[in-house]
Length: 186
Image 1 (cartoon, rainbow, N blue to C red):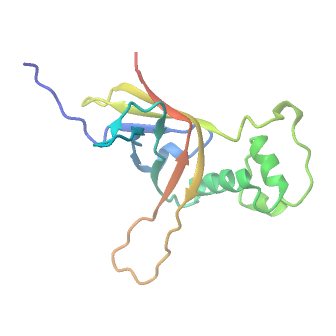
Image 2 (image 1 turned 90 degrees about the vertical axis):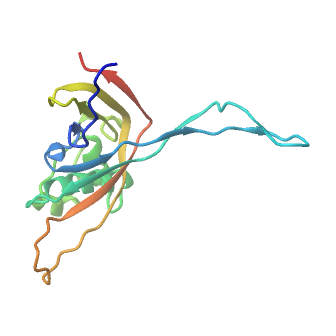
Image 3 (image 1 turned 180 degrees about the vertical axis):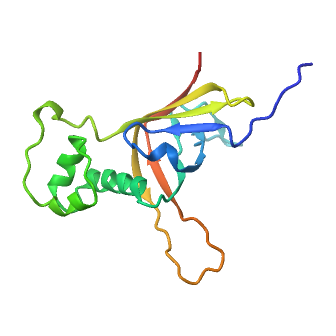
């Protein structure tokens, strides 16, 4: 019998290339579950269950520590508001054109700008993500590839003046995606 090590919850890396600051402040990633439905055929006794023909992926939940400049929060905020065009069509143009705006530049969102012709289309709306699982020696051995990832929600957080024990602020982001699949690291 071979001696096996157990997986540590500390041995992982997660990256979404669209988010520049994202990997630095991740606190936790909940690996989504997958499921299928079992259709049933009614009988006069107990129903007969059949093998399902569709696979469903649960949402991806990530907890992030808020950095001092709120850079990661702002990146996700721009992505999420750009997807929905909550205020102006310019937010959507900036998302599709992959334009990175600073906090000061957001005041200029109402100015009319042309979409860069080299980036026409919707290629920057979604991103891929990679959850890398490391072994006990912190060496990567498996990647879980998330396809067509985009944020669907971002939690709020509280600023406080009455806390005697300073805690760092975290917030949660929910991502939808098409599917994920494991690949071995070579």
